[in-house]
Length: 145
Image 1 (tube, rainbow, N blue to C red):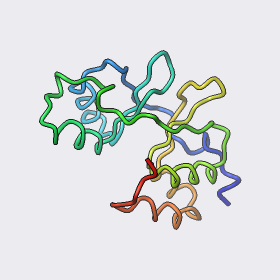
Image 2: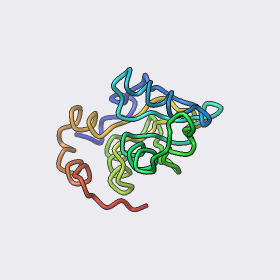
Image 3: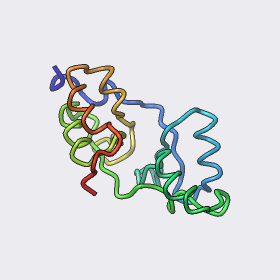
Image 4: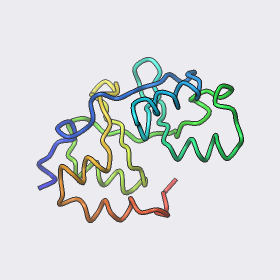
């Protein structure tokens, strides 16, 4: 049952991060090197945004901007929605569905980034949540924001 599974049990703990002022050229190079679909952005240990492949396409490529001339803060999605590491996966899925996000940054009690929970992790670890996840992981799902 999903309500018995805690976010920190299935989240990705080894998260690649960039600073707000990191060049997008460096962000893209890191994403390519480690085959990442997203990268967290933080400042002073607190998450400030997330950059996804979609963000790069919409806010960088389609605008014809040079990655070397743009910094992470100009491309990332913000505000971000976080969840506490001790929350249930069921709570996390409700948040993900409401906001239409596939990556949910996970924080500790002090607000520091400790991981990321992805829709893929939820579907593999808690198959009973797959039906709910399927709905908002489809292309064209209308986000609240």
